[in-house]
Image 1 (cartoon, helix red, strand yellow):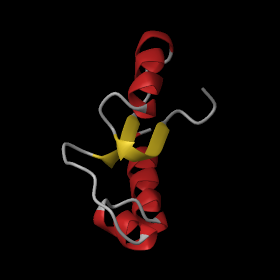
Image 2: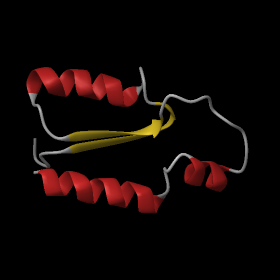
Image 3: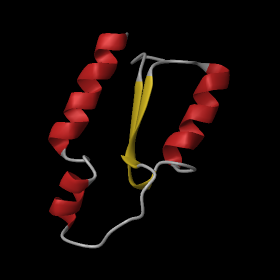
Image 4: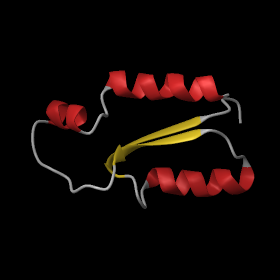
Length: 74
């Protein structure tokens, strides 16, 4: 309620994940602009964690980019 927007970031599939649960609560109680970050419609892969964050666009830079987009929507 204070921020007026929500970004969830998870290290696994977005579908059915934490972001989906948060979205369910918000849509009924406090709809706000929202973005779910994580693995979308693809199988996971193994490797170096830093490289995987880059592969799935979950780096700090990617998160800041999405936060700025959400702020612009408010």
